[in-house]
Image 1: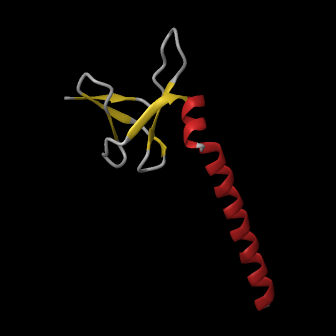
Image 2: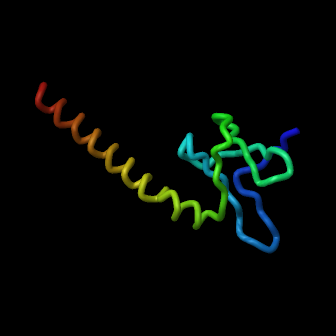
Length: 89
């Protein structure tokens, strides 16, 4: 008795709602469990799902900062790979 819920549930009178899995640490699709505000992650199956507007979820879980940190880390890895290739030649 689960109901599928898409990532963005558009409402006519309000902002879009998104679902963030705290275990997967990303925005996910969910299944609604029962009639209460309880959702399960489709990816990992846990009930550890938060929901809110895009602005509130990004602000609370600092998703933009995490994305910037991952980009910096990827850049460092690229630079480390180039410098190690230059030394071996």
